Length: 332
Image (cartoon, rainbow, N blue to C red; front, top):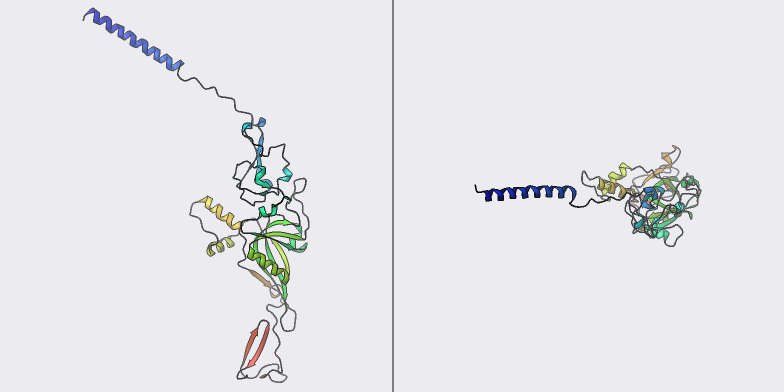
């Protein structure tokens, strides 16, 4: 091979090796500059903002378990946020949600309405619902252990006098179920100044009902005595089955836990005037009646033997309410 070609090949080889070393050094020491990571801010030095611990629909009465304070970036804090150390926590419990708040979302001053503010009770009502005040006594109000936000059943107790002799029929029946308590007297918050529940007796209870239920309550107050029965927080399987059978609550698809939670929440918040139950005096004592006393037979009526108190021959008994009339067959 000619010396000139050998020199050219050697020069090209040297240049290639030099380029390879240069490229290697550029990738190792050059390239994109390393981003300097800023130190994470200390949560204790960050402002703590009030956030919702669960979803709060419109009309929810806020309790201590509905919110908590969480560290929040200082540059993202708004004036409407509740800041720890600058907020009176005692005034938050018992407030009503005016605009829906999602879980983890900061609670703003415009999303809550305080007790005593204008429109407080209207904000606490669900769509299409009404507020009705019911007078109660200490015995009929669970001795003051009913607080705003609780769920109660409404019972009506009355004496039904018939046309006959003897004591009237004593009966008590549950006419409405699963009603939400909005206030007791003028009190919409169950907590005292120290943040603990305070048991107080009251003479009036304001409850949330449908328009039809409001009419039934007004009539019930003219019939007899009304008593409140406090409900358990636990779910009622029997009521769930009846609600599913009647179509009031739609069954979710299998394997969808979120839909099941939504169904149970809808059932828990749904007042009902169905499935009325009752108990008469005979259910309590054998010396009480189980039906309305009937009007005695008139001994002077046609077809009734004198002194016997009983009709002779075929008769027809006609009942008009509590009055029973015996009419012999063939009479005009």
